[in-house]
Amino acid sequence: MKKELLDFCWKQVDERTARLKKQSRELQESLGSETKSSAGDKHETGRAMVQLEQEKLGQQLQELDATRSILNKITIEKPSEKIRLGSLVRTSMADYFIAISAGAFKKDNSVVYCISANAPIARLLLEKEKGERFVFNGKEQSILEVL
Image (cartoon, rainbow, N blue to C red; front, side, top):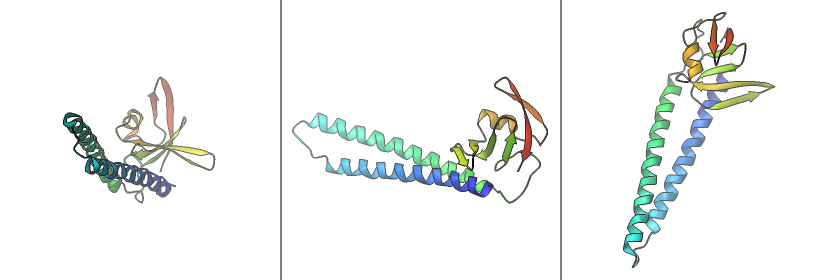
């Protein structure tokens, strides 16, 4: 199942990258198709807005590169007693895959939440082992399994 979870995370990143690159191409095309009109100020404002959007997209693409490097660090073959990056954790309340924030993975009536190691629940779970208890949002939970 960890392989499927990791593939799910990669798919989320790849889809987001494709969307951002498409938006960037569209912005580039709109920038190129802007023709100078007699309303020069309006033209310059339009160009500036497009360039700001391109900068935002560039920043989002850099963040995705950082996310990719996190995914590249995950080793799912090596079992670990302690919860770490790449662990699948079953708790008394929910199941979590510690990787990146990619949402809920659903398969056969089960849901696993793909969460970042920086997520509040992940910070509580890291370095804990099967059988340990923790409190999250005022509710005590126990770690049933670490895969």
